[in-house]
Figure 1 (cartoon, rainbow, N blue to C red):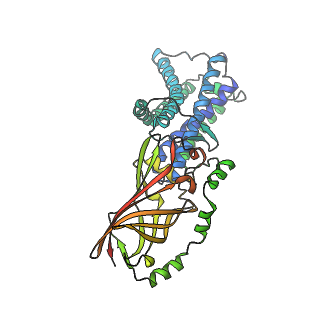
Figure 2: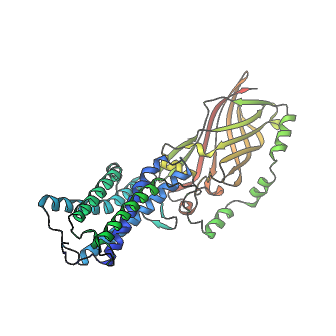
Figure 3: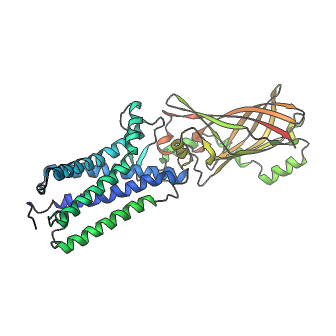
Length: 419
């Protein structure tokens, strides 16, 4: 066999070579499978994990490059000029992908309109790059090409190693442990590596995420501060709310008329993020309304909102809103408002006081609305405001209000028909 001196790469280089090979193929499979994950919590968790693996590849690749530049390595295998040029190009491009790939993903996250905090494997916060918005689209376009480019380069790299192996050049052996010296052993090791690479690719593609990568809980002092901001009187008012059975009995006995909401209504919200107004809405919600202007004591409202139907115009932001740090749709899929009293506030204007239950917390909320009734048809528009932190919405790194403000506006409009 052709002798190449030194005969093998350094042990650190060998270990990093195989670890990075497995991680790269796993990451390609994972990236290709993200769009096929169920929308919401699972997809949000998948993207968080994808970012964590990408940063791991970046750090290990920089370490691999440092080892390559500081430790002796085998000389290039003598071959034709074209073959040697191709081999060098493949190596350079692989390094470019291992380092540039995670950086383009980092740029995408850093230049997004809504910046989602990257938590490495749900534990270590990772900062954003100080990059301008103009880099977002180029980084996104380049990042989208990484999957096929990586697979193509890996195929060329493996084909080159096998090409030299069949020419009886000791190329595969110099990336293996010193104990493997025979051609048969090298051939078996190469076959195992190919199978392992395919398995890593398939494993990444088949990953599923039942829940988001865990984020650190709110610090005890922060949680206490949030609770302290809500007077004890609010807690006692929530505890004294009538249950569904009592409400049903009250509405049955009331003289007020039940109404059915027609399709086409809107239930929306607005929030302030870094001076920009974020607008969104919920696609699925309903309300049981019993109302008569002359029987406000017998009138009532009970609205239920499917939080997973949130739509803010940005899929990644919607996934974040469904996560445990915000709505927590896995444990609390819906929010509910139950009125306790309705009073008149002017001509065709009313205020419904009640309790909103959101993210496992119940707090008093007042809905102000205008209602116009013509025959058996009613048109209602209204609004409310609430403090998201009082409901534990926006935990961990989102509990600060310097970027994402505490106040959230609610607006609604709909038509209803008397039953």
